[in-house]
Length: 203
Image (cartoon, rainbow, N blue to C red; front, top):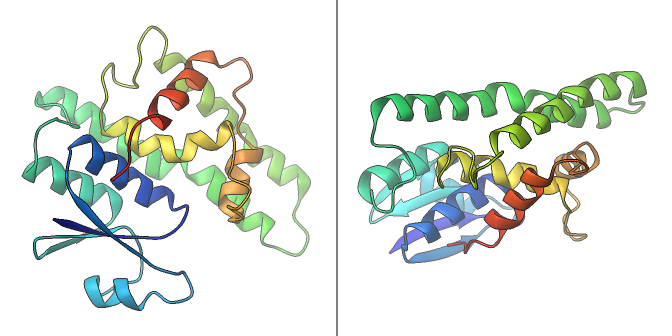
């Protein structure tokens, strides 16, 4: 059985929880509190979630975990077997981390200040809106970002889902940023995709 160290409303944990359920793996959850990370520190030597303990092999970081699960439990696949398609997916995952997340992270940092600059916030929000248009076009005529369910869908969904709604109990600033600066208006393909992925089980 795989042990998953998780925290409430964690986008990175949801990436892994979706992958675990998709692969039909049995999971035991260990919920941590952000005010006391001792359990995950003891397990992994660091305080961030997600972390998995897969029969004694401890893996941290959502993407590293997805790659680990794919290697050890290859079916059903989340990464293409073809080298070219695998490279395309790797480029997308890298883009999501290094490009897509820049704007919401910067907005969060600006809003943490005493006097957030409205003009700077608007400028930072513009690429978030443009990126949603990219996702809308990627989903034209197909159900998933790469044509079939893949790590790309599980990687992006926990962030893009805030374009639809946010649990009122979830008061994390970063998640409020995602809700306030993303819209599904005029993006039916993206709206349907969010609903489709949200219906998937979680481990």
